[in-house]
Image (tube, rainbow, N blue to C red; front, side):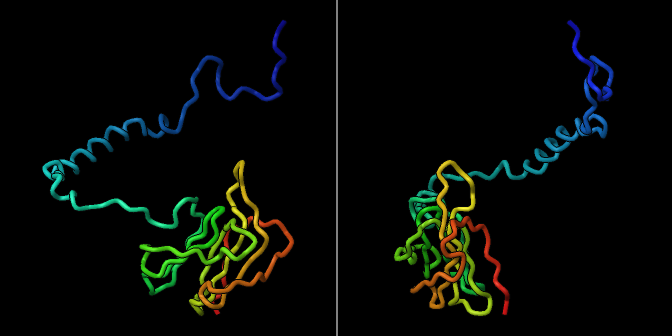
Length: 176
């Protein structure tokens, strides 16, 4: 029994390989040239090596709130020490020492899934939180609205989307 004919015409003769853009434009030679250039540039660096004495005093440490996926991060322009981090199911955390210590500042709220954070450019004490993890996964956690703090995260008030399951991926604040 023969195969039914396709209503679409064939784009290339049967038994031939498709012509890729790499072949058409000569890109197949590009990887060899790139490798040769990388080796030529790396040659002066080959004499440099690390010895254990140079890194023996370094100690590894965890950076950021422990135990969760950090979904959103916001900082205060001009202040290198204050940051906020929102976790997928772990609330909002704040550091005032550049990340050495983190304090949970959203634990009193009914929701812990964070999708977005923003600090108002007009006033760094105004922090916005969009709840609900925005990355669709098999175990995604939904939120329950948008929250606002006017005292750098000491207190929170739900200001929007109450009663609606939310997955907030971004908050944009008007600059004024």
